Each structure stands twice: as structure tokens, then as C-alpha cells.
Amino acid sequence: MNKRDFLKGLILFFPAGGVLGALAGDLGAKEAGAKEAAARDAGGTSAPKGYDPGSHYYGMGIEIDKCIGCSRCVEACKVENDVLPEPFFFRTWIERYVIKKDGDVVVESINVKGKASKERAQEDSDVLRTFFVPKLCNHCAHPPCVQVCPVGATFATEDGVVLIDSERCIGCRYCIQACPYGARYLDPRSKTADKCSFCYHRVRQGLLPACVEVCPTQARIFGDLRSKASRLVRFARMNKIHVLKPALNTEPKVYYAQLDGEVR
Amino acid sequence: MRIPEQVKRLALVIGILVAGALVTRFYVIPRSLVSSDLHRSTTVERELVKPARFAGSETCQGCHEEEGVKKNKSFHRNLACEGCHGPAAKHAEDPGAVKPPAPRDRKFCPVCHAYDASRPTGFPQINPVVHNPLKPCIACHNPHDPVPPRTPAACSACHAQIERTKAVSSHALLACTTCHTVSEQHKRAPRTALPTKPQTREFCGKCHGKDSPQKEPPKIDLTTHGTPYLCWQCHYPHLPEGRG
Image (cartoon, rainbow over all chains, first blue to last red; front, side, top):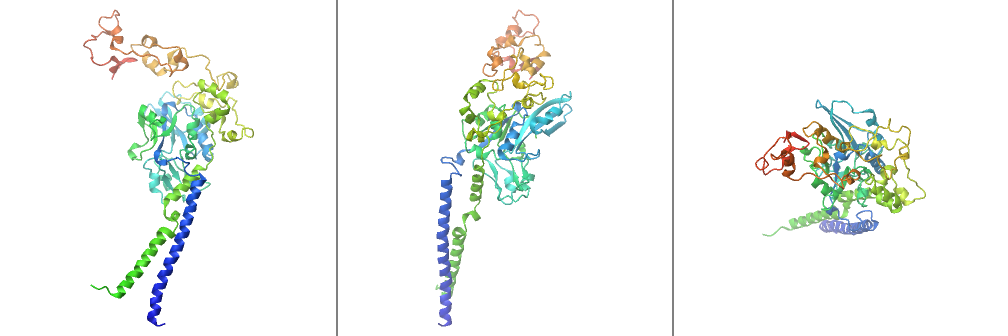
């Protein structure tokens, strides 16, 4: 074998080996992919048959005039979603607004079991108006938290729910800073961000979110914006609807009726 | 033009390398490494396998039919069973093993029914300190059919704001029933039997028309005054002095 033959052989050998290897790998990958897909179809953990996320778009309506500040929703949420019991981890919470006659506005998050309400008898004659405002993640159509996440751990599903991938989240807290509604917190157990998921696991089973289920006065209404016959669509049609911080163009999907102008 | 042999060979090698890179990128590397779709679908799957702790009122009433029928006719018809009894999905799965609690002490009902200035007007509230002290709520009120001691005697019990407004207006001496016809049913189920409201200009004209036998009310000529508008489009009947 002279030098020329050796080089010719070399030029043919390496690319041919590469192509063969790639083809073998390709076959393996295809098999694995098929298995994965089959597992997903059979497992039933993903979309139950007939569920098309594209044909749903979930939102919540809140009627301020009906909220009695009993915190049933807050407690139910904590139980349903395994939220830490300390009074600074909330997926949903209730704020008490007290508007004074001189224009001062006092906002406080009420404690679970309504402990605050007993102590603070708002009998002062300088109170102009006082009411409760339930708050939660607004599941914005343009969520700032999704924009800022450096690892793509938080995202909006096709049916309009903003979720967090706790396996991808690196706990950098950037989303907590970015949320204009203060809806996120860092779960100290997993060191990842957490927030309301509209009880996605319940909704996909056809149940209502826990807070909506237990609300004694029907102040919370959950529904599908794509369905013409949903309670939420009717709620939005029959009431003058407000959202929180509309100027930010986040397009929240939590709609408030009878919202006082002072609520931020 | 003839392409030199060495250029052809070089092109072949480069072509094979590019093809290899493309195959590696799109076939050899698993999709989960490059696509966010799989991450998202696994997140959704992880979300979906979370257990629901609240079974929902319909599940409860599948067995506890009697309580359900009773509750659904009462003032508590909109309350979920698990609002008071706590999450009961485990109980629904295995009714014998897990029993949901039934709150019976005086601490529980005031969570909703203690007086709080921030609560909406008309919501039934009591002062737990003076309201039959030490007596459990369920001694007088059945939580599945809570009946207030009596139906409200006066409209102001619920419509306090309107009553206060009317009290300082020139309509202060008119009874609510002068203009509204209220059925007895309205006291028990306010939203199913709404009181009537005046519908025509002639109704106000009965007192305010220039031919009216009443002396005191200010008179106008119904044919020229404010046509074609209805009276309450300019005058709020509960405070007629206020315009707008």
C-alpha cells in the first residue's frame, strides 16, 4: 500500500463509519421515542381521551360584593396544594381594604381563621368604606414571570394556566420579583418558586378549584372562556369587569366585579 | 468549466460532515434535550397526578342524599359540604376508614357569621360575645337548614343603604311599598321573587303631575317636562334632590 492508497482509504473509511454509526443511533432513538410515545398514550396521565387543551381557556371571576373574608378558600387551597401552613406562604389570600375619610387606604392580608377581623373592629367613624379582596395568581395572557425565567421553567399551557416545572426551576427568585401581583413565593422545602395552578389537577378531572369549591357565598367563579355556556362568560357579560393593574398589559384572567378604584 | 478533482473530494467530505451534524442534531440527540415541549408535558403530567383532596359536593351527595336535599333548599344551598366538613376525598374512597369532622363548637360558625365591618351589607352577622353566650350554634340553628329567628320585618334589614338615603330625602315619609309591591316570598328567597318597580312616567305623575290632587309635591306638566325620558333617568327616586 502506497501513501496515496492509504489516504484514499482513510477518506472513505471515516465518513462511512460515521454514517453507519449515525444510522444505528437513529434507529435506536426512533425505537426509544416510539416507546416513550406509547407510554404516554397508555399511561393516561397526560391528556385523558378527548381532552383538547386548545379548546379550553380557563379564567376566574371574583365578585367583591360577595366576599365575606372567611378564609375558607385560603385554608382549602393550603390543604389541596400542600402549601406550608406558615402565614406567609399563600397561593391565594384575602386582603382587607379600609378606606378612610381622609383618603388613606389601609391594606392588610387577613389571617387564616379570621383572627385579624376580631381584633380590628373597624368601628372608627373615619372609615369611608371597607371590604375584602381575594387575590391569587392572575394567570396572565402575557405573564412577566414567564418572560424573565432564565431556564424556561415556568410557562403558560395552551388552556391558559401558568405552571412551574419544579424540576427545572433553579430557585433564582427572578419570577417572584417580576410578578406585579406578588402571587409567587419560594417554597423552602424544594427551594423552587411556587404559586397558584388554578388547581390544574382538579380542573382536568372536571372538578372546580378548591377555593371555588368551598367558597360559601359564590364570590369566586371558575370557568372556561372558550365555552359560550360557562358561568364565567355569563359573569363577565353581566358585570362590569375590572382586572388588577390593567396598565401593565399583562391581560390577567382573574376578573373582578364591583372592584373599588382604590384596589391595586 | 471543469471542477478540479481535489475540490470535489473536499466538497464530498464537507457534505458528509454536514449531513452527520444534522443527523446528530435531529435524530441522535433525544428530543427532550432540545425541545421544551417534553419538559412542559412532563410538568403537566406531574401536575395531573397530584391527588385531589376535595371530592366535590356532588360526590358527597351521591351517598348523603338526605342532607343534600335539605341543604339545597336552605339558605346554605350554595355552600359546599367540604366548606364545613373539610376535605373528604379520602372519605369518599373509603367511607369506613376516614370520617370527616363535623364542627360543633361555637368557634366555627362565627368564622363567617361574626360581625365584621368589611363584610357586605345584608350578610347575616352576629356578635358572638353577646349572642346567646356559651350556647352551641347548633342548639338553635341546624347547619343544613339554618333558619333565621324570623324573616326580616323591615326592608331596611337588608336594604340599609337605600333606607339611609331615603331617610334624608324628601321621600322620607313614603313607605317602600308606596312604589314597590313586595311578595311574601321575597323575604324568604330574595332573588327568586323580586319586588316590582314603577315602569311609567304616569306613576310619578300620580303625585307630581299638575292635575294631581296632592298639594305638597312639586308639580310638573307631564306632557312637556323632560319628554321623552323616564323620570328616574334624571331623578333618583330614593334621593330626588340629587340630580344626575
